[in-house]
Length: 204
Image (cartoon, rainbow, N blue to C red):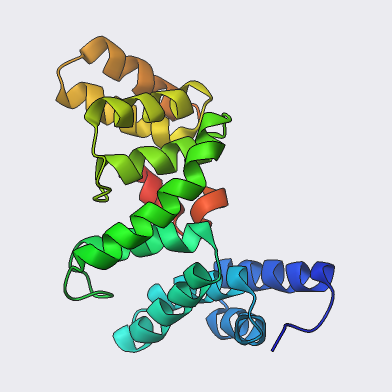
């Protein structure tokens, strides 16, 4: 079953759902997305899953994971990236780590982000750094991880700037830490292109 309506109509509905969510209208947001998700729209599936993950009750966690998995299986790279993190360590969503699933989705996301990172896309560079740095991808390489964070940060990508500030502080490189932390204060620290609902995650 395919989603009815034009592409423009679907995009308008998804934006309306996001606006409703941010306004605290949870039922409206999810009700707008559900028909699109059921119709096979991967972006709507991911957005619906992300919303259900953030509900106060744990009742929707299994459904949330199911929608994100459907989006990833349909080829949504952001969903694959999210699943890699969700499966890597125990959480309310995935109560037991699943290394096999984590590595599977790491590999899928890595292969999709790598050419985009090489082409200079900062969101992809940051994602690739995360995948090689702490999400369990088999080619773990600290130097490569730092290189991707740095390339993204040098373009002003705020989450990467914040990571570098923390990294250099931990390493005792105080001058570099001050440089990146000052840069971070000057930037918007959200990451809308990979997770528009989770801007708080960039503040860690």
